[in-house]
Length: 187
Length: 188
Image 1 (spheres, rainbow over the protein chains, first blue to last red):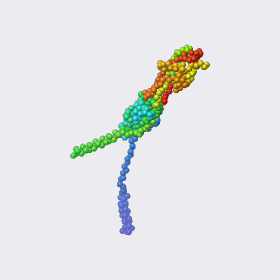
Image 2: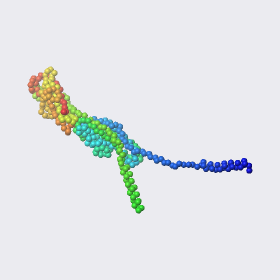
Image 3: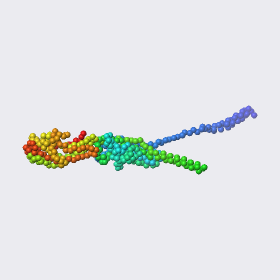
Image 4: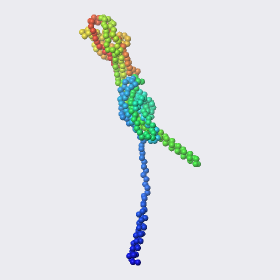
């Protein structure tokens, strides 16, 4: 056998060996360990009330049942609630039923003489005990049942006001001031 | 042993359920929004009359010359704290010439009488809150208490001219005209 033939055989053998060795090396995949990321998304529950105005004036006539407020106020209640909430209630209240408005000199207009009409409904006096404010000094303006389709929602209540002085005919002339509070509760 | 274990698990589950239900009953409140209220009951005092003219057919020297009609004065008020009285007054601008013929002949206020609510007939000879000195009469005085800060009062006035005194019997024939004022005052 000539040296060229020998050399050829060696070359072929080496080529075959290289091919055999190289092919499994190229097919191997190397993976890292798996790292995890914990995800947390919080949709916070909320409830808020906004008012279209914050002042109402009254020109009173002594002994008159009809002393309307100068302007209506729209209360917009917005909420985003947990599934367990059953209703959203809107309340109007004073802190003191005996002196909803006062002239500061001992002459008062009680909450029983202060009336609210909600969304053009009948006027109702603030004589109930509600979750907020003084005893017998409040009114539940509205109540919305929370179902699956309104856990996120809004409601508007157009509030009109009246002071009924028919049961307080002997009031002193004067300027009577007070603060009516509007607040919502989800329960 | 197995039953006890099951019982314990049941108690724990019940506790968790109770806690969850209590948590869900908690009320969730919005912020409180306020509306400032301002109500003004203005002080007022008004007086209205049922009529605005009275005629007299005079008889010379006669003490009794009654007016043609009575007039009712209605006084209404809504008062501030501190007022203690409402007075109603009748008065002329000139005591010497309550009525005049415009030619120097006059009927003085002392000859002009008013009977209030069928009471005694009284001449206008006092100095009152309004009008001329010695030319008036206080018809009524109402004490203001807690019960009548907002109230009204009526005074039915009957009029008479007495021409029997002094030189009045010599009053010349003529038409005598004058203006009687009725006014109310709340004090202090």
